Image 1 (cartoon, rainbow, N blue to C red):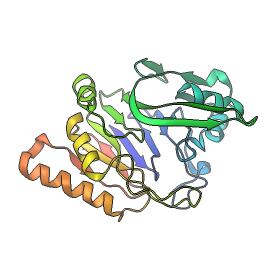
Image 2 (cartoon, rainbow, N blue to C red):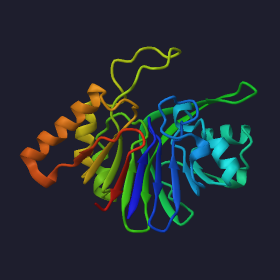
Image 3 (cartoon, rainbow, N blue to C red):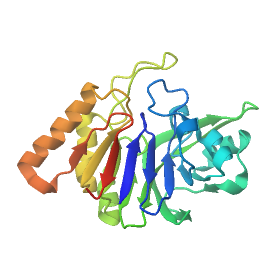
Image 4 (cartoon, rainbow, N blue to C red):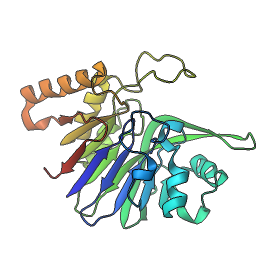
Length: 252
């Protein structure tokens, strides 16, 4: 049995039945709607950093240096973390397809149609690709982390190959940062995120990339999947719409 605590935006805290803690894309201390701050987190064994955007990895250095956490990430994110004082020995760099294992958890990076851009303290700019993740938990649960991806048809192949039961699905974008342009959609629209969830063959599609549970995109995503379940039954995923701080447990 694994618990999934949604921490706002794309941040999740997973706790396995053996007590291993996995933190995904932490953005807490500068998020006014985060239900916890880094100081409130338990000891973190493993951190998955999908890419270098501030709202996905800003709190990684602090937590990793505090707890000695192992980190799985891409090359440009690794260089940013080292630049911020994280010991290289704690970091496992990987890329799409290269499965790694840390803290007893095999993690398979998969394609995420999203960029990863970082800037080091000396001004050096680095670009790479975001990593999607298939997380293989000790109880046999397989978790897909979408990592801000846009929709792409090989999600069908990811579903066929890895058969994830749980998907952490970016659905929307909140235009709450005044230094960014106003975006009309997130990387996936509600319909696209629902379609991706079906292509992946998920049992449960957990929405993320938001802090406001009343975000209309989130409610549209929920409605689309519920309508699909009315039509196709268990062949369609069950939508899960957590408020920041909510905990989902699998198996139910």
